[in-house]
Structures are given as C-alpha cells and as structure tokens.
Length: 229
Ligand SMILES: [Cu+2]
Image (cartoon, rainbow, N blue to C red):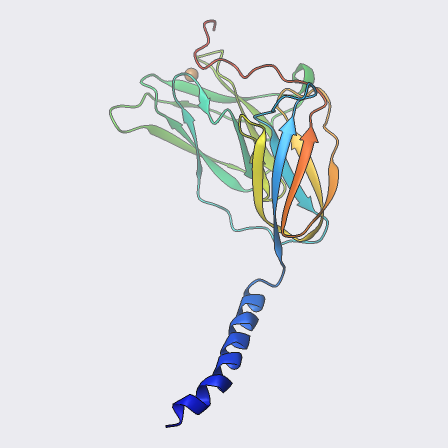
C-alpha cells in the first residue's frame, strides 16, 4: 500500500545520489584531443610524436606495465615509440637471429646524447619463445635505437614528461584522451627534425580538434627490408 506513495519521492533522491557520485569520482572534467599533423608540403605526417602539457598542475600517473618494442624482420616495431617518463620498455626479439640493441645519439649531426645509454644482446627466438629485456626510461628526452649486428636497423623512443603522448599514424592522425580541461601546450616532435617544432597553446573542453604542421617534410620511413648494411 505504501509503495506507490514512496516511488515519486525516491526517484529524485536516487538521481541526485548518482550525479553526486559521478562528480566526486571525476573532480576535474577531461577532454579528448583529435589531432591531424601534416608535413611542410601539406602531406599527412606519420611517425610524429604529439604531446600535451597541461598548464595546471596534474598528478603523475601510475606507471603502466612494460610496453613491448619488437625486433622483427630486421626492424624495430614500432619505428617510433612515445612513452611517459617512468615507463618500462620490453625489447622482444622475434627474429631467428641475434640482435645487439644499443642507444645512439640523435638530433642534427648526432649532437644529442640519448636520454638513456645502453646496449645488450638479444639471442634469436626459438620456436614460440622470444628473448626479452626490460629497460626503464626515467629521464625525459629521446633515444635513437640501433643494432651492432645490423647497421641499417633504426628506431626511436621519445620519453615524455606527461602521460598525454602518442604517435601519429600514416594518415597523420592521433587522439589523446583524458586530458584535464583548460589551457594546455601541444608539442610535436619528429625524429628527423633539424630544429624544434613550434608549440601551440590550446584551450580544451570536451572533444577538441587541432592541426599541426611540421617545419619540414620528412623523407619516407626507412624501408622494411633495407638492402644495404
Ligand atoms: Cu640486429
């Protein structure tokens, strides 16, 4: 008998409770940023690191699990990897021969020291078992990857100061999610750049889009199976 009388009164109270819970769990609204990057010649720019740095203070994220960087067909895959500082990279050799991975200097004329120096040999994969090595990158910057055995192998790791970092696809597109609303700086970086790319200041709320243009036109990415050493 009492049920019909209670229902109308309960509904608003329940709705209010749900709304309050949602607000408490996400005190700062988050924005998503959809990016398109082009070369100076107006073509889609892949392999571009895009990073967002909020103007307001933010909490560093919990370190993610180790991120795989595979050696397969005498290539590093992905060719360009972008990670937040503090991330561990798991080098995985899936080739049936050894690789000897090492850090190399980068930048114009090789004048930029790698953010982390290392070299290690990864034995050939046998059947389904690949050989792995974990390395933690705890200093921001970049590292050029090479191989002592295969001189043509190249790869790049970009270690970002914030968790909002990724790499554009072949169409020059990338999406960054969960960025705190408000003023941010958008930074872009390409492994072949000779000078720094200019940063953009953006005001983010909800879903935002932005475009960036490199100050040069990179050459095509190294071929998957280079002929020379
Ligand atoms: Cu190698």
